[in-house]
Image (cartoon, rainbow over all chains, first blue to last red; front, side, top):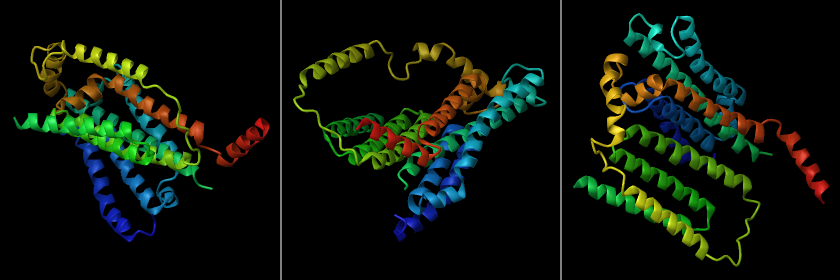
Length: 139
Length: 191
């Protein structure tokens, strides 16, 4: 598919808005539909589109499997780490209220961090699965 | 009125897609129809005002899983599947009809869609709706339930996703060359 000029041009136009939309879904999930799960999947869809049109090697140059493995663990670590931090600040596990000066501020910060962890983890796991499946066909 | 028309149209398309999937033998076309099926389901969720679920269904069901299935087909296309011969449709048909009838019978007890007296609306849902804004300051109740009230459940979900990634890496990732020689050795042992 790497020689199809229409696909190349159109996907170059499409990928930046997809990434912007993923970030919007990630950080606007408190107010509109969306959140970490959806944002992670949309973000990985942008990279998968890039890999489908420009080839797997080009996509792995952009983000390698090693980085993805670290990111997948990092996402879970952020989520679980927020819980540990709240314990050290004197609350229960994942009790975000103790994170901020007021209850609302603490909840906002906690939910933002937790959704970020979800987004990073889902994004990298989806790409790990895609890269591993697609990479097997390679000689 | 307009909702009913949209619902009936979408459900009819869903049924047609499902029948087409059953009747087809071309795996590539079936995967494409799976994607269309997911997309129609997402549209139905939008009509039911479940935008968050629709979002996930469109992104995961119609997007990622279609790509993954196509990649899998590309990997396995060398091995032709054998069509079962002498297969009788009557027993499976009976099982499916009885199960379907039981499910339809079960739906008769389900409260009407959007019924305010339904158990789902009277148990904890009003608590979430009333307390989400003053307690968390988040207008989207789905997010506040998912990330705050049920934060522990969501942590479990993320770990499930993470485990899926690890499982794929362990099963088919890693050292490709080494795995291939081992497979060749096993094939030689078999012969």
